[in-house]
Length: 106
Length: 220
Image (cartoon, rainbow over all chains, first blue to last red; front, side, top):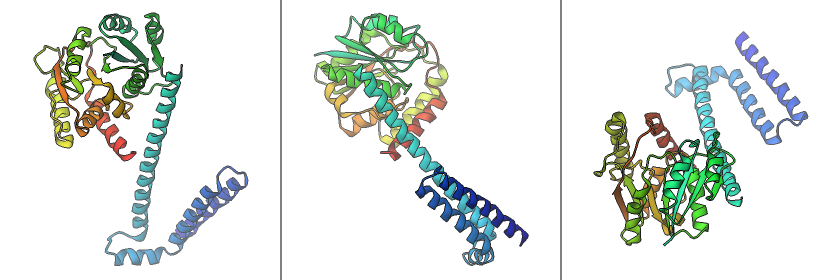
């Protein structure tokens, strides 16, 4: 119970930061919506952790719900890293094109 | 037929002038693409009174070659030769490389270190890295050439127009080979000599090539 309350407090902290960042225009509206949904889902997962435990057990996983969430989080992180890497490759391609154009123009 | 030589150069101040002077009398035109060298390569190449293109950012050998190809095509090249700036190839062998294209027997010609002529290849490279590279090309792309990682090549203007090198780094060798096979060009291998001053492409370089090829496929 204490752990859940502590985790929720952390989420509240990040949500207040999110609101402040949005007010100062440091992040775009789409980004703020993404993070708002992310933190709200995290809060829901913490509140209903027992239900998640039951669902995970029903699905046949041996670990607890929190373990399952950790696996999912790591999978999502890997996906984001991969996406980011692809984006970097595309940006690099554009840098090459600009460099080439500049070289040929001179 | 206008034979145009493209020399990509990155920190080759020691050899660039000698290479230019050896290649210049053999071809109709040549261009050096300085890939943002940090030494005096650019300045020295310009002093040789030939066209020199400069990359404002270092982009890798493949990118420099494509810049050179674009320049050669804009200037009416009929045959484009890729030649290294470090002095490891022999300029007089350019004639052997372009001959099959001049004779209309090939569209693209690859130099090979393993077809008779003597090259002082480091042992580890000859016995481990090269067979692995050959195996990789054979298994994944069905390409069976004696020297798939050779940077000395000649191609007709038609081939240069159709193959756009997208791998900025060292994967351009594989990329050109794959495209040549896919487009069903007439391919020939010509024996060449390579004088090794240093080891060149290492095992880690080979891994990077494979990684570059995978990312190229994914970002297409």
